[in-house]
Image (spheres, rainbow, N blue to C red):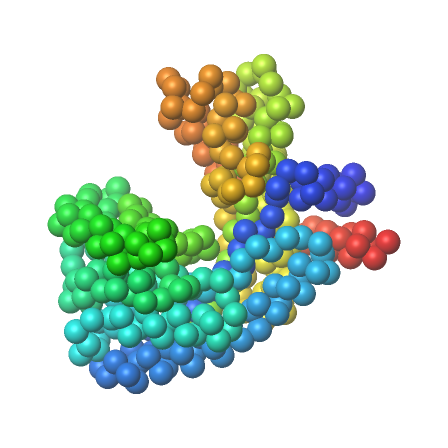
Length: 341
């Protein structure tokens, strides 16, 4: 690691709004399933508060030692429609309250997984959960909900489209005193991925390990600054610059993920780079697209520019993120040395 690279990362953090948006601990609740809802909820609370007891503490330590902003510490769990489906409960609001109590007990910002996957149809648990969403989000503070209603492989569940329209409307009505905040904690998906660390759509997929650490990195400001350096160049050079920049950003996420994994004794899962905007000035994906050459976002070519940007970001993995473990120790020591000096 060159000092230049360390200073470049520090500049990204201080001037270009780069941050670790979230450390998200994914926890499987499959072993909490019980026909008695009260028993299942007790198991859920105990497991979450046991596994995530030191999550916030570890995140704060890493943030302090490395000088890397870590904005949120979060938890995602197995979709509650699966877990609660075995119970005899007629609604799942009590399950949402249990998740909320567990999130508050360990101090995380949000907990995701009040979710259902209905791209091909409803189970009993799916139907009950979807009906419970408005009340659940109105009566909880940190619970986030999501429903996957379609996929490229199976198509779109139009019954779910109709039902979710009603759910969104009712959620807005029940949270009108907080400007419809319940809807900000609800995502309707197509092609949901099971290792998403970002809220409100995070849930812990059934194909995941019992417990993992996933990291989400936010970097639209950094990407915009990188694109400014190749203004007027061809799309090939622009895409190449985005790929190189995305790799640098995710490398920092790799460091944080590995460090959190070691301190918590939990396997490291994935690093996910998001170009979603934040309220910070200059941290807008719209500005990124305009820097790519659009006269204004929404004009002709907006979809093509976004597709090009997404493709370049995805291809960051080809830059060798798989080999990040080779540089992790060096990056670790360089950050420590820089902070100490």
